[in-house]
Image 1 (cartoon, rainbow, N blue to C red):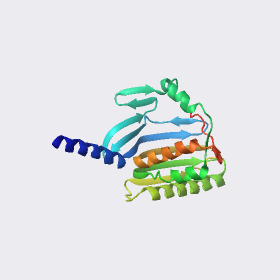
Image 2 (image 1 turned 135 degrees about the vertical axis):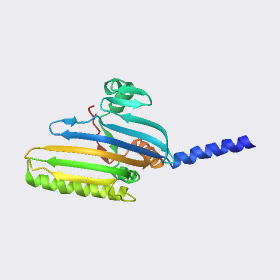
Image 3 (image 1 turned 180 degrees about the horizontal axis):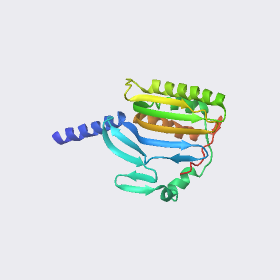
Image 4 (image 1 turned 90 degrees about the vertical axis):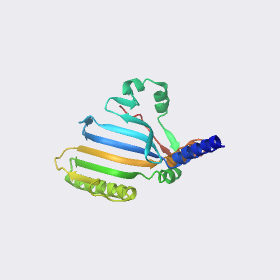
Length: 213
């Protein structure tokens, strides 16, 4: 009797733990500059972890400058690109999806921000375009943060967008971030997109190209 109760309790604990779990992203000192190409300036870390009940980390990976770390094992990007999984993932250069259904499902993926420290410096060859981009980027980021911050803390949530009138195309970004998604919402979106990809009648087309690493 006691054993049966314990097993039932354990199953319920895991079940509800997954339902209320979070996929959390932690970005540490990511700094890069884009002009003719992307140049990373620091040895950044991007950590992705699944947290039971949003607190207890049960699995995680770390994206570093030269590879991916899982537990104590590290895999170089060049090695991963030779695997069958990677080849299958980028084999198709286009995936057709219904735009409205995709939009409705993406709304479920509301990102919650525990910490945001973003500093962007940008410039273009046109003073007018630089001013417009500064306003547009600031507006978009403000909207995203407004949706994703439940309790604002000026010490944890801040961003600065600075226009640089240098008459050249350039953008420099510094980012520290702790953000999360509800895992159950990710599952719902993946299931819906999987069902959507099987439909014969597709309205709009989105192209996904291989990302060079």
